[in-house]
Length: 382
Ligand SMILES: Cc1cc2nc3c(=O)[nH]c(=O)nc-3n(C[C@H](O)[C@H](O)[C@H](O)COP(=O)(O)OP(=O)(O)OC[C@H]3O[C@@H](n4cnc5c(N)ncnc54)[C@H](O)[C@@H]3O)c2cc1C
Image (cartoon, rainbow, N blue to C red):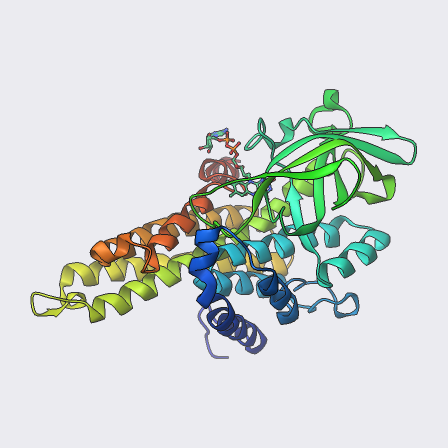
């Protein structure tokens, strides 16, 4: 049997990656600058993502999905992030957080109702964080009070990705603040539910076309049938989904890093100073070589974590490592690309300043760098 590199893709994986990259080059690349400047996600692009089949990658075909694997989802996120990290995170949240959580924790009724909706044109969002609870997510304050065959939700969520576009929200609230994390429960909430509204949209450094908003709940009634998993087990839903979700963030950062490296190679081969291409200077070559090694290492970590997850093997430490490393690599390689573009790297007419801004979020959301280090250290010292 021939020995393949760990980064080798199967035929269907290659086909998916290439077709998503081709789509991104054709449909997204022309509007990237406008989307960034206007901090807006075009509606028609959303429709095209559904047509492409990347909004329900792991959902079975009978429920309208593509019947793919987690690796497929990760590859789609990476390919999209090569062109635009905002589009990548919209697809990432839809697949690796929202659909993943419903698939794993939802009963037949929730799966039928929500997976069909999510593959049929509805965007999903995942609402855990609050103003006072980020890294310490289970200190959340949003309250769910039992009221007959429903729960009444009151509180506020902050930083919710996709909130502007979403119709379906997974919302974490506590049914009993005295029970600590054991009170946390996950609810499926639909846009338009009385007492629920989407609030202020954040004006961000990077991934500007991705909406990040506050959510407000004022005695919002949610049917008991919309509890995802069990009452009091929301902490498990959150932990287990985020463990997988951060592989998607690793893929997003890998896409950014690869794009920055590609731009840097192309530009330094063209740009002439002192009578020759700057790529001919050994100082520049060594920077590019180091960046290429960083990107390869990030790809190995991301693909390894995704494949472990698909194989049903333990992957939590590997997922933390892949997100930790890929997000640092994305920032480092994008920064190098800005440097190698010289003054042109600092202006918006060239693509690399945006990659640098977009890379920064990788060290913050779905668990900051320190929280990934905590996970890795815990496994190391156990
Ligand atoms: C653009 C964007 C999109 C987001 N999307 C979503 C979303 O869709 N859904 C959602 O629920 N949330 C989302 N978030 C929230 C995100 O997950 C949190 O911002 C993140 O978890 C960090 O929480 P925090 O901002 O409260 O920072 P804090 O937890 O206050 O952390 C501040 C600093 O303290 C450090 N720190 C905290 N605790 C420790 C510790 N124990 N040891 C060492 N260092 C520590 C952190 O590493 C960080 O550097 C998003 C955030 C942003 C900016």
